Length: 604
Image (cartoon, rainbow, N blue to C red; front, side, top):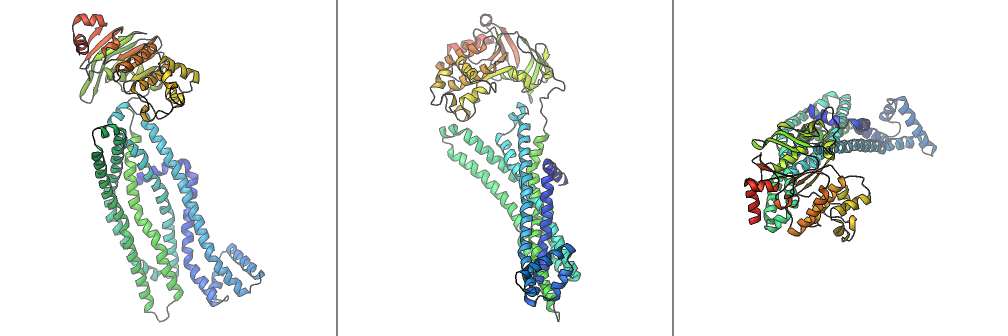
C-alpha cells in the first residue's frame, strides 16, 4: 500500500504546488469544523443570558490579541449603528455562526478544487504517457494483447486512480484533523467524559479489517469485468456485419449480459463492504451518546453546556470517521485498478532502439537477409533465410499460407527482430538504425487497408504529413484515385467513415497506394495488395501499383500469381525455408512448387 501511495504522489509531482495548496485548505477546513463545539454554548449564553454572561466574557478574554481586536471592532461597529452594548454583543455572537460556516465552505471548496485540478492533470498525463508507451511497443505486444483490455486500462483504470487522488487525499488530510481537533477539545473540557464517549469507537477497526479483505478480492475482478465489457463491445461493434449476417445479435447480447452480471455481482459485494460499516458506526455513535446521557443522568447538577458540546462533538466526528473507515476500501480498489496500468508502463519493448544510431540511406541500396531465423513461440516461421535483393528489383514472395512471406516483410520493417541472423540495407544492420529512420524509407501497401474516420485528404496526407495540396492531388492521380474522389460530394474533403467504410474495396486500396506514392520511399512492400479485390478493381489497383513501383526496390507478397509474372525474381517459400528462386519462366520449366501453385490457380 505504501508503494501504491508513493506512485500516486509521483504522478501528481509536476503539480505539487497546487496539491500542497489543496492539502493546506483541507487542513484548515478540518480545523474549522470543530469550532461548532465552543460556538454553540457561546452563542446560547450570550443571546439568552445577556451580554454580561461570564461565558462570553471569558471566551473573549481567551482569544488571541488579534482576534480580540477584531471582535471588539465588530462590537464597536454594532454599537455605532445604534445598538446597545448588550445587543452589540448578541449580534457579534450570532454573526459568528455564518462566519464559521462561510470559512468552512470556502476552505472545503478550495480543498476540493485544488486537489481535483492536480488530479485531473496528473491522470491526463498518465493517460498520455500510457498511450504513448503502448504506441511504442512492438507489434508482437499487440498480437498478444486484447484491444478492449487496453482500452479499459487507459479509460476505467486511470479514472479509478483519479478518484483516489481527489477522494482519498481529501479524507487523509481533512477528516483526521477534524477528528483529532474535536477529540482534543473534548479532552480539554473533560478527559474522563471523553474516554467514556469514545469507548465504542475502537470497534470500528474490526469492520475495516473484515470488509477490506472482501474489497481486495472483488476489486481486481471488477477491473477485469470492465476489460471484458470493453472487449465484448469492441468486437461486437467492429464485427457487426458478421453478427448481422449470421443472426448473432442475441448471442452477442447474451454474452454482454453475462459479463455485466458478473460485474454487478462483484460491484455489489464492494458496495456492501463499503456501506455496512456506516450503520455500524451510527450504532456505535448512538452507544456513545447513550453513555454520555447516562453519565449526566446520575449527576445532581449536570452541566447542560457540556452535555450539548459533547453530543455535538460525537456527531461532528461521525462523518469523518465514516469516511476514514471507507478510505482503506477505496485505496484497495484503486490499487487493483493501478496494478495493470503500472505493469503496462514497466513493460519493455522487445524491439530496442540502438544506443548510438547510424543514418540509413536506402535509395539505390541492396537489401540482404543473412541467415534469418524467427519463431512465433514454438512455431518456426523462418529457418535460415538467405536472400539478396538488388536496388530497383521487383522481388515476389510466393508460397502457401504460413510459409513465412509476411513475416519476412515484418522483420524488414522491424516489427520484430530475428532470433538469429542479420538484415542489412546498403550493408548497414537495420538494428543500428532507429525504427523511425528505417520506416521513413519504406512504404507499405497491405491487403487490409487501414483508413481512418477522416477526410480523404487527411488519409492520403498520412504518407507525408505537411504535404501540399498539389502534392496530395498528384499522388491521387498516380494512384488512379483522382476521378472517384472528385465524384464524391465534397471531393478530397469527404469523410470516409471508420476504416473507410464509405468506400469500395478497390477505392480504399487506391487511397492506400496514394498514401504510399506521397511518401515517396525508396523501398516498397506490397503485402497481397490485390488479393481481396474483384477483377475490375484489381486491374485499376494493379495499374496504380505499376506506377508506384517505378524506380523503387519492391518486395511483393503475392497470392495471385498473375500479378507477379513480370517480377525480376520470384522467391518460393515453403514451411519457413526458401524452396526455389528464379524468374517465372525459369521456375515454370523446373516443374517444382511454383509450377504446381501456378497450375492450380490458372487451371481453376
